[in-house]
Image (tube, rainbow, N blue to C red):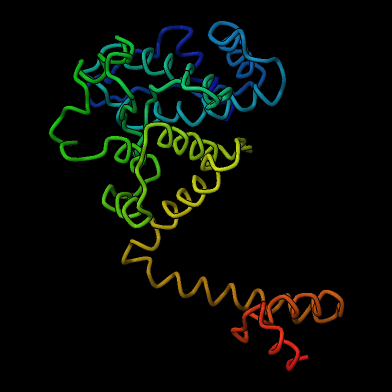
Length: 295
């Protein structure tokens, strides 16, 4: 990860990041073989663009991982074969650095959180998540021909937040909206950005702690997110045969644990049986008479 990040930060530093494809020759950058050199470019980036980032390994690791996920855009065809958009590299990478900074220090305790993010589909093409076109930086607008994507025909009669999140999670828009309708949920701006941040943490394999008062929607956020992830499998006709197999293998796995571990420990086995017996026999836990008969 450090090599990829360092490679493109070096290109930003020496201004070669704005190169464009020349005919049938794509833009390409040589790998950096010296790990110390990679770290040098990362630390130079932090010093220049995010000097207020706390100086500890956790923040630096988070920043690097968020940036790594973004700079993979520069390995995709959208950038490597670009012959049209001027300064695509420097504009995109500068914004990516700001995104990595905000993702590392995100806080939803008030409404003053960043709302402009580049969103990537599986092919790492650029899309734009924003709450207000007027708040999108001028340079970033130029990457989209100074036209708000939200106003294009492609997004007519669509929930723009749902469309962006569907790209990010790699599911169809219709699948996303089916989950929304099935759960009778209204996708607000705040909830959309929280989903965005949760998924970014998943993609970078970084730990996440969700804090908040009772009733603010912490549990539902994760339940809704899990439904979106599961829908990628359950909504795909080619994958439907896998679900029963997963259940079968899960049952075999649990049975093996019961037979090889739990049955040999009487205390654990008795505790588990006491817990599941009413459910297996479809008994009401408050029905003392029937429980006495069983005992």
